Length: 151
Image 1 (cartoon, rainbow, N blue to C red):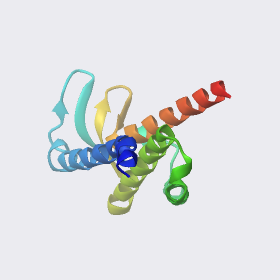
Image 2: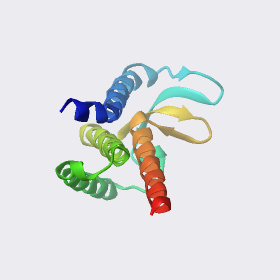
Image 3: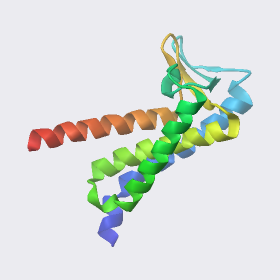
Image 4: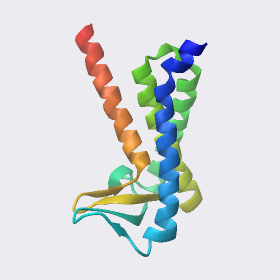
């Protein structure tokens, strides 16, 4: 049992990131909404009410956001019930995607939009949950690529 706990410790990383994300969102609402924190000429922390998809991609509508949320929940239930069938990297990727999606879903339910706060000027505004989702997708794709090379 102890070895399993050690094996799966990296799965705590997405949980820690979501806690940091929720804290940063609170700062965005309370402080950065009226006074952005400017880090450099290209990066700052601000408040942005994102009604679109991750990284403010304008491909969403309310209905599409809810469909994606339902798909995430179904995948989450499947993933949890089949946890033992996946490798550590697959578990890390799926955990990141699902937890990031649930965090953004909580915003949509509570506010009607997702609170984004990391602005890379002339590019996008996003939050740590978006980064978790993207990181999870990258890990999953790299894992699939590695698996296909080994077979």
